Amino acid sequence: MGSIVAAGARYGEGMTTWEYLTAPLLIHNTKAILDNFGADGWELVQVVPGPDGSSLVAYFKRPKG
Picture (cartoon, rainbow, N blue to C red):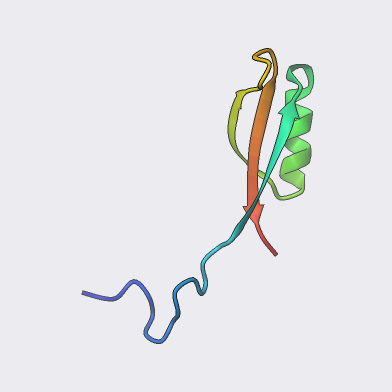
C-alpha cells in the first residue's frame, strides 16, 4: 500500500491554503454579483440568512497566492 505523502515531504507542503470573503447578496442582482466574484477567482461556498433575517450573506473562498 502506497503512502499518501511523498517520501521526504513535510506536512503541509503542496496543500492549498485558502482566503475567505463574506459579502451581502442583493437578491435583485444575484447573478451579476456572483459573476463578478467568480471573475476574481472567488468560489461560492454557501449562502445564509443575514443577521436581520431579511437579507442574505454569501461566503466565498479562493486559493491564496
